[in-house]
Image (cartoon, rainbow, N blue to C red; front, side):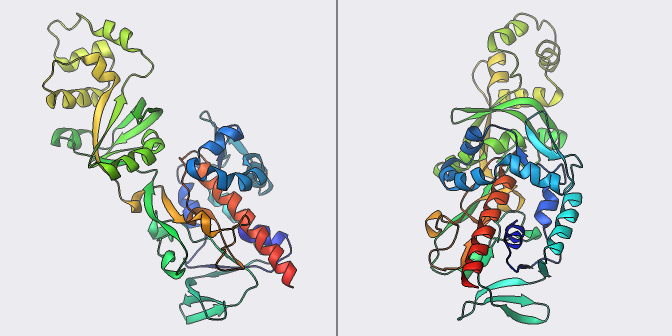
Length: 385
């Protein structure tokens, strides 16, 4: 996005990518449907960036969701709004958009260099790159760094770049939008790993999130989990474990559920009672039974179904997280995303210190900051030419 913005502004642009082909993380993001942005009203949208809201707001206001939707349409990829408010190209996948985008960049004269891994700067400010043919250097009027975070390292964003910016403050990378470890019983792990939890709600730290989740051999992940992941991760820094509460029946209030269960068990086994009178699926029944085995108190079945405790013991590793927190500190950047210590060097995207939930917020901030950095770099190029 930085390359396109700079080229449109009249700059001569070279993109150096250390992978064999570009935009691999964009392609993987589109594997289940490319969620470009969200239709939420902008004030609420911006709140999703939490502590980074003030830093990202100027760039997203200049290039907001409707601008990103129009940009995709200009590449022949009309978008639609899903039932959850998420915005997708009608083709759903990233590859049609990427092909059209690469053709547009080529028409703008943007040169793409693959298998060029950035090694830092030479004494004269030139960018150093490792290539298959050895080290090469590129001298440029302005340089935009879009080095990514530390999730999905096999796609290129391995989080190794802070070592190449000595003296520049960064916050250590941490997983974001990830699952959490839970010590399931052997029975539940073997029988239900890979089973979805549909139409549930999770609560932690006073926040309740509806959605879906997935039981895995090692714990739990999924959209409802990701929405709470930042607060759970921070709690686990203070304590070795945390308790998340699962509501298996969020559309039914506690009193109505208690009435369904009251005095109706008779000779039914507990599992049949929960299935017939509480309407729980097998995974819900298994979770209730697992919780009962670890409790010495008289069970309140309705209360347990509405607030089933899940003891999480750690976050899944950053390599399997959807995104990452941490990165380049905002104090290192001016209002144009230029590094104060390195005039002429700009930064954008996931390498900046921000995080957001899934739902289109991640890509939107990457597109908006990329465009801002590209335009600022082009202005500098024009001033010095």
